[in-house]
Length: 489
Ligand code: CS2
Image (cartoon, rainbow, N blue to C red):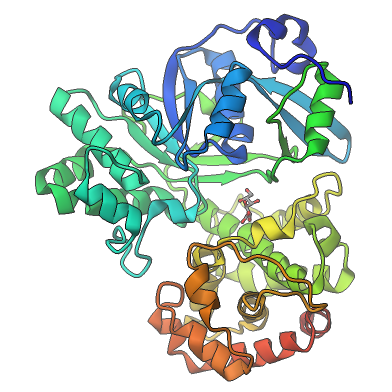
């Protein structure tokens, strides 16, 4: 494709058909977002722009990358922080340029500017999508993991923090010392009870440094929980081409996503918030039922599809769900094993939710790679699958398909598909998990169940679970496709 000029604010006048609404008033920064990946740009940023269009407010966003990724910052800053959301649905492609992002910073390079913003009382929300591992938690206790390298660094150098608990603690300390009201901390990651989980990580970090500060954070800072949902794959050249075709401008960093989106937010924002409720977000008192439904139904089956697919050779979710036995397995898993564990309000139709998920997975335009979902299994398996297994075991119920999913992860750790194709294992615990992956099912299960960060003792000591896991591993080792055929029920 011939190169076109890059997207920039001056171009907006010619893009009226590709913005949410013309007539944009440039807002001041009211939100600092840690973890400026694709998900945030297709989710909170879109809701926030719509909320500002509906009700005004200075809720412009400063996005921060925590991994020193200056290329992301530079690409966005070179486009005046504009980017396109490329929505891919059954009815075609829609390209929308989002304007809510105002500035992008890369830690640790932009530390001074980041802390200047975090101290600014106009910044009333600090939101996060840093993935499960960004919380640096010891999953056994929920407290911050003191053996984490980044945490050890931040405790030794609290003025130059690098981790989420370290950055939030230092910024909140500065607010307390200056008498500035604290910002609200809004977790948007797929963790169960994410607000409370983040609060515990931050407060336990602060407690090591300063008891009083920890107590102040615990009693003065709001950490509402949220359930976020939109399927947002990583960017490929196909999105760059789609954006350029639609806009006639070059966008180096567009974001693909599905048309569906959902956001359920615990309504606890003492310093104020955008009018998200005006644009489809649900503001509720208790997010938990929604969060569990999403984590167990969507993310749980996503991970199941990912590990079975990595072994069987399906590279995208739509390809996987088009395989009838695998679709039947996922359908049965949601209907018989996951849905009964959920305690949702009467207005929430779990079976309709299941059907909508299957339809979303079948979106052939999205190309959501199973390898992307397979990343970070050690962080994802506990809330997505093990919590459901625990709930069913304590009620004396069957766990056959859920166990197959966990077994698929264990076999996945050997590092190659059934046809011998090798793949990388991207996981913060990869070195430990792949150091010794025995072939014999009993030994593989024994080795992995001893990883306490992943398997709570109630599960690793559970005989029924252990035996079923051994059987499921044996089945999968004979071939994932065959195992899917047998377990579909
Ligand atoms: C996925 C999620 O990558 C993954 O692990 O399960 O990112 C999923 O697409 C989102 O949670 C959907 O809202």
